[in-house]
Image 1 (cartoon, rainbow, N blue to C red):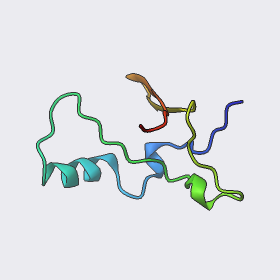
Image 2: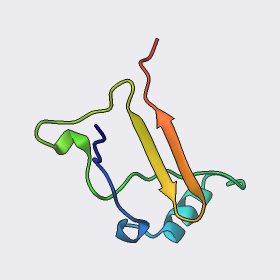
Image 3: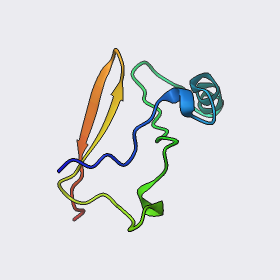
Length: 78
């Protein structure tokens, strides 16, 4: 079963992508290929009823249109 908890676009962020880049570049040097992961404005699983959190075996997926998709498997820590 695939559960989509967050699904949104950068147009809905509180700060524009340009403003985020400006802020981050004020305290770190950005290199080609760097990714700034902001989450989504759609909310978080902790505020759902009942709360929903990542579990081992689930996949977190982030897509940038025209660039591609990054998929990360959630695993248990040692």
